[in-house]
Amino acid sequence: MTPIERQISERLSCHQQPRWFKLSERFLHLCQKGGSVPKRVGLISFLFFCSFLSVSPQRVNAQALLPHTVQLDAAKLEQQGLVLAQEAAQLAQFQQFDLAMPRARLATQLAPKNDKVWFLLGGLYLQSKELDKAITSLQKAQSLNPKNGETYFALGSAYFQQEKYQSAVAQYQAGLKIKPNDPEGLFDLGNAYYMLGQLPQAIVEYKKSIANKQDFWPATNNIGLIFYEQGDINGAINQWQQAITKANSAKQPAAEPQLALAVALYTRGDKSDRQRGLAMGEAALKLDERYGNLDFLKENLWGNRLLSDTKKFLELPTIQAALNGQPLSQPAGQ
Image (cartoon, rainbow, N blue to C red; front, top):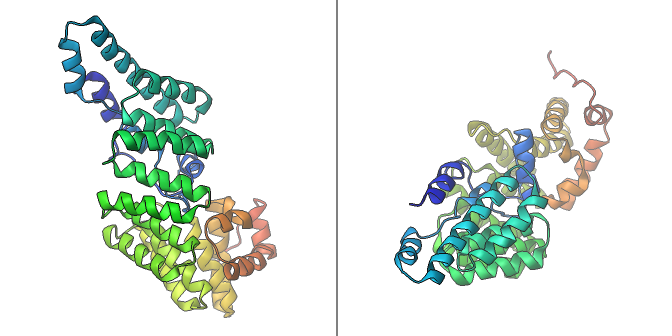
């Protein structure tokens, strides 16, 4: 292992941060706030794809042993490209994307046969919503290394953002042939089926995701979203309660299932449920105020029935006070 590889492995190990499951800016929001990340698009986090930045030390060393000066220069250029890629990854970690992007682009010129560098550039383009460029870069990475399942997942995310859900399904399925038990990949595939209206198949994939990662609350949460739209309110409530428990067990308090459960309880109409719903809704919005925005909820796959009930819930004076930053009301009995 070269010094550059070792440094990347130590600082940006995929064991430190998993590939997450939402739009990239929401991953960064997690880093800023320390809160939970909502889910819509299965998108590799920068810290995760940076862990793939490496070169084969055997290849570089073999080049370095050859006496031809051009080969020596090529090896040095590739090493410099990896240094720039590492810098780009670190800058992206701190949201300095304007500085990260040119370094990543130059890295692909210095190390054009390294799929990990193209993978990094594709991720940066995804972050900046330059989806066509992201797809081009990721396809280049894919052509250099067709056995990296993460590249297929990233391409699926790009197509998902372009609302090309069938193409996203194809990429997710290809990635899952390489990593069949990847819970986030299964979740991503479920989301694509969700957007295609294939709800039974979406539930199948969500359940597979849960089977491979018991505390993966987003999949449980999304099953609740489907149940609610189908009119199974009690079933949805059960799923959201499970999602909250899983999130808390993983020490990742999640605003989304809390707010969804709050709306369902309040809408069900029982006085005790309404009091619980108000208190829970206030707590959820304190955890992540973005859930007070209906457009944001729609992006996160909330269906029409739940959005309609949430709109009424958000207009309640108590919830409006929470959104405006006023002190939370005390739950019933206090």
